[in-house]
Each structure stands twice: as C-alpha cells, then as structure tokens.
Image 1 (cartoon, rainbow, N blue to C red):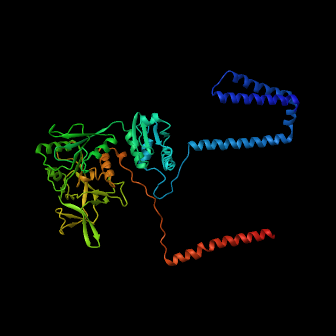
Image 2: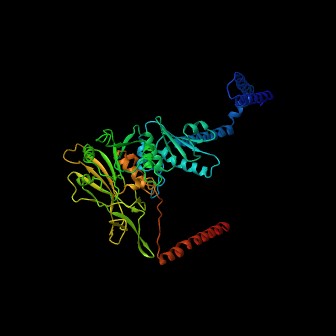
Length: 511
C-alpha cells in the first residue's frame, strides 16, 4: 500500500468520525452532513483506486481466498442464528409440565384473549423507592408474559408516577405501587391485585360494551344500601357490582307494582317484612317471563314469599345453623358463623371452588328441596355445610340441635307455571348477612356473590377462576424402604463416581 493511499484512508476515517459526531450532537440532519458523507466515500474510493494493483494481488492469494471463504461461512452462520432468534422472539411455544398447571393460564383466560378484536393496553403504575417494587414488577411481568404468549393484542407499559404526572392525574393514581389500568376501545378498568383471577376478570369488564341492570328491591326492611356503622348494609356489594360494570338501581313497589321491564336481575336481600299479594304477583310475573332473581333470606322472619318457594319446590326451615366446636370443656357452639364448605362440582357458580375453601354465613337457615320437584323445575344444591354444623330452633342453642349437613344455597331453573313463556333462574340463599359489609370480603363470600351475578347475567367469562396451588409430591417410605434408598442408592452412587474417576485417571496417566 502506497503512502498516498494511506493518507486517503486516514482522511476517509476523519470524514466518517466528523459525520457521526455532528449527527449525534445536533440530533438532526443538516446540509453539512452531505459534505462529510461525500468526503468519506470519495477518499475511500480514491484510496482503493491508487492501490488497486496491491488489492488485486492480495485478493488473488490462496490464503486470502481461504480466509474469505471462512469469513463467508461465519457470516452465513451468523445471519442464520440472527434469523432463528428473530423468529423465535415472535413465534414460540411454551409447555407447562406442573401438575396444577401453575405456569399457564386457565382455559377461560385463553378463550377470552383469543376473542380480542383490538389492542388491549395494560398500564402498570409504580413508584421508585417503594419497598419490594422491583419484585412486584418482575412478578407482574412474568404474569403478563403468559397473556402475551396467547395474544399479540396485549400491550404492556410501565409508568413511574413521578416521571409521568400527566398519566397519574389522568387515571387518578393515588397509590404508589401495584395499580393497573386497562384500556380497550375507549373503556377503562382498574385493578389493584396482580393475580390471574383479577386480570382476567378485569379484561372481561373492560371488553364488555354494555352494562347490565341490577335492581335491589326495597320497602320490606331489606339490608340497606346506605353504609352502616355496624357493617349490616350492602353498600360494599353495590360498590363491587358497580366496579364490575353493572348498573345497580333500587326499586320499590310503592313506585310501580311491576318489576322494571329492563331488569336483567332482581335482588331481594334479607327481607324482614311481609310482601303484599300484589307484590308477590309482580315477582311471579317476572319469573314467568324468564326473570333472574337472587333471594337471600333473613333467618327467623316470615315474609310472604313462602308460596313462591313452595311453588318451585323449596322450603326454608327457619332454623339457626351454627358451628359445633370440640373444646377441652366438651362440645361447644360457635354462634358467630357457619361454614359452607361443600360445593357443587358441576354448577358454574361453585365449580371453581375446591380444596379447603369455604364461605362464611351468619346463622343461616337450612333449605330443603322437595322430592320430587314440581314438573319442569330443576334444582341443584350449590353450598352445604359439613357434618360439624348443627341446627337449632332458636338462638339459645340448647341441646335439642340437629346435626348436619345442611343445604345453604340452591340454584333453581325452569318454567314457573303453565303460563310461563321462558325459563327463570332463581338463586336462594339461607342467609343474607354473607353479603353485608362485614362478611362480603371474608373467604369465598365475594366470589360466591360475583359468580352468582355472572351466572344470572350470562357472563360466563366473569365466573371467578379458582386459584392454582402448587401440588406437592410426597414419598412415604417404610423403614426398610428408607434404608434401601440410603444404602442402595444415595451412598453407593457418589462412591461409584469417585472410583470410576480414579480408574480413568490412572489408566490415562500410565497408559
């Protein structure tokens, strides 16, 4: 290579560096960059032209051709590896070999994601410096990656609240960490618990275009909608339903002797006063038209709704069910609650519940279904107590109690009578207090309430997902089996590896 060629190479390098520095410092394209780019190309071509004989001889050498062949092979392999990784990032499959499928989404979540027509934007708000913020972000990312594996419509964004005050104000973010906003077709939903149950439920809410109407019946001393200091109201239930995109309204038969025509559901929660005949007729007419009703009873009160229950094959025993405890002093009665721990494994409402889960009821009454049921009516026992429960005729809890199990919730369906035009759905609960502010968020009460509403509104996707628990594989060994494991496997195996390694070393060392 000649001296002039080297100078041209140096000048081309200076031109390239000048081009890069000016572009980086200005952050935009300016006319000077054309000059620097032109000088770089010109000096480079001049250097090659001046020493063209040198390069021709260099390229014709055997070692150069072999090196270029090897370089081409390396380049081809590199391109192939990049292409494989590029495709793998966008198209890949995952396999879940865990027994409880804890590393994959439920079928319900997968089906919901497949139905997305537009992009679903998920915004995770966090605050730097908050204890455990990185672990929370990592856990949320791992969870959302499962959703993104199923649908390219999931768009995830992380927002630090101090860096984006505009978004913090827009979405009214007051909590520092673990607040998630979902947006879909202009609709929003907010969740504060990063679990599959909550994420999937939030997607259902934000993707649902219309709100269904729930009417709370008033005028018979039902549980009050306004908050009460003793927690005996259903204000939290109303807030919960509103947050799930249900329109919750109140209705009194003093305004109209008919159930509103636009009612998707009618709630009768804890009535303690008699219904007039005209009011009973209004409820019957609603059932004849295929109405959806939740009736939660108050133990110890007759309301005049007994004929409706009798007509569908249900009798409320009007007794008080409590939990029986084994104490050092003998058998005792816990009047605070009764557990509903036996669920129907086939009905949509209770099918997700399993294991050691239970509902908490406050002195419920037992429900009996007649045998046989009226023609055209089907009934399924949703929730029952265990045998540890006992029913009493009054709250003195004397020794005349009857042992369980008892049915606490029934799902009934069918045509109300010969004049009915459609099948009704009626959910009867032997207690109303499990829906009040004090008990709603205890154990599975909230899930039972939401699942019941989702079932009646035909929003099957809102049926809550049973939490997945890691299943442990236990190995129960007898004493003889344990000794065989120790002396037949655990101890001999490392000795065998040690001896084999020594033999191989000796043979290679002295061969």
